[in-house]
Image (cartoon, helix red, strand yellow):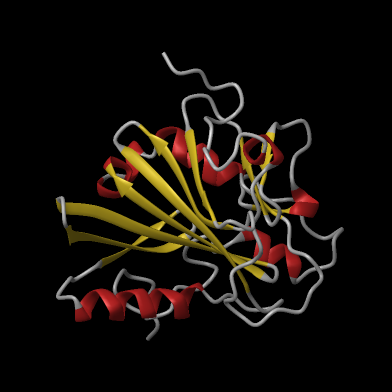
Length: 222
């Protein structure tokens, strides 16, 4: 009756694709489960000894070759984070979520609806974080590939948008995949409406240089 074949059940449950281990962990007491093998991590499971750029609710691992571009408002609040590697880019967002259930299913349905109303037909596929959404969209510069990945964590959700080569072919995520796997989410204790963006601010390394976002630490332009 309920076969496990592709295209069967509408909702992919934990047994089919690892949803977010971070979320699964949050539902059990701390001693019951090992920390996940890869992030985005909730702050309490983040590996130590990693150099990261601290944007408040999000800490981004400093990875050789990845350029970090941050758009901030005059108050120093961050409005957009984009990581660039060659022909690929990764835009990150982090949002408040309930403690016990993920919101990616619902966010994904909205992205799907918005794209459909623009005449775009996204494809759903299973990736390492669960269901992803990929499409080719029209931009002022011509057609572009985009792929949305959602990761549900305890009281947070990371929405990752791959663009360019990494969107068209997941095998080409390269170092951007390492960035997503190494992300750390620091969820404060403030009660926040579900899906409100978590507060992000310019790292002091960037604030000191005005609004010019520099390259990530350890990255040299040749």
